[in-house]
Image (tube, helix red, strand yellow):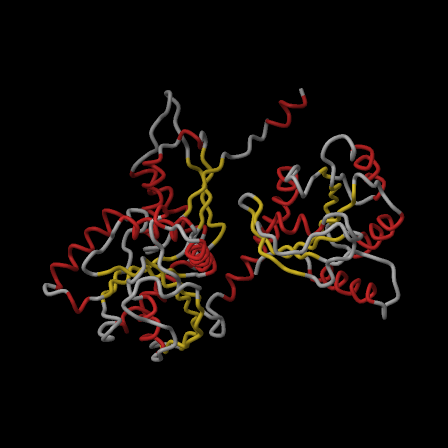
Amino acid sequence: MPVKIALVGRPNVGKSTLFNRLVGKRLALVDDTPGVTRDRREGEAKLGDLSFTVVDTPGLEEAPEAALEGRMRKQTDAAVAEAAACLFLVDARAGVTPLDRTFASLLRASGKPVILLANKAEGNAGEAGYYDAYELGVGEPIAISAEHGEGMGELYNALEPFLAEMQDEEELDEETEWDNPLKPLRVAIIGRPNAGKSTLVNKLIGDNRLLTGPEAGITRDSISVEWTWRGKERDWPVKLFDTAGMRKKAKVQSKLEKLSVADALRAIKFAEVAVLLLDAEHPFDKQDLQIADLALREGRALVIAVNKWDLIEDKDEKMGEIREMAERLLPQAPGIPITPFSALTGAGVNRLMPAVVKVYIDWNARVKTSELNDWLQEAVHRHAPPAVSGQRIKLRYIAQTKTRPPTFVAQCTRAEDLPTSYKRYLVNGIRDAFDIKAVPIRLILKKPDNPYAKEKKRH
């Protein structure tokens, strides 16, 4: 689950304005009247490449518990208790008030990490209030303007190390329970309009749950359907996402279709496995490749599903052609599983879920560090990195830092000079040595720490 960050502060300091900016939509009502927000509201926030859940809260006020303001205060207390950290907003133009001081001490007592934001700091009017904020004792304030988007870079810098630490901890939790038989496997069915996505979902679950027809673009929202697939070894709870067909960007004109495509993109981000549905008569259209690349760049495991197989006469020849195209056009996912079927008749549909489960297991693959380093020594011995400007590049150590998708960090001298082709050689070597097919593999090159750097700086 995403990390929760709560926005707290007295009424009318700009919490809802910052909330809307972080989620990228006008979800929260904003007005000059204090106390507009009465319930806590959650939204999926993005700040650069950071993703987290942001919680907008009612303004903190001192009031009896039975009063409306007191009940609103409980909403804020609950948000703080659930949050991993708090963004504490003060009004830089109004300066620090006694209420700000009261709630600063309450936040300190909560034990939650606090990032202090001096809002409305655009221009010179907020300068005095910004410096006053130091007295609150919750760290150095960051000057921002939620309305104009100023100071978001500084907020990013403050959140990045904290979120990275929290997400690493969450991923470790996820890795121990990814194969929990009660955890649903999230699968997004994606592709161009009229490829047969809704028909496939209906055939998988054995029910006409979704509206289908010959017209393109019937599906507008990403519909989730919960279902249990009965595998050979165990039952798998599955959450299937039927998505709207994604056309070329230039052809998407209406606001409704733009919203539908945005919903499909969100489904890909929430899914663990993406099933790209192709039309057997016209496989690997340019748009198909763009959708596949999008799913792989998001780090999703990918399965190619070829629909309308009943319309193909020479099936062996066509399958050979599709496999060759996949290897040539999707080199970033070699060995990607390809399952042909007819969603209309149901022939071959039973081959899809075993392929989905296989890539899902690979997506969660974890390799022992000792085995990785044995492989690295052999790979470097077989094909050493090229020398650059007469100096050798040395690869000294490798470890897996994450799964979902498998991510590896290698210590490498002159990491910035290592050719892309050699990095590709290493990634493909990991795939072959540890049988990790069809899922994105991320390899990060990191310069080893220089033990003399601090000494040199001191002198």
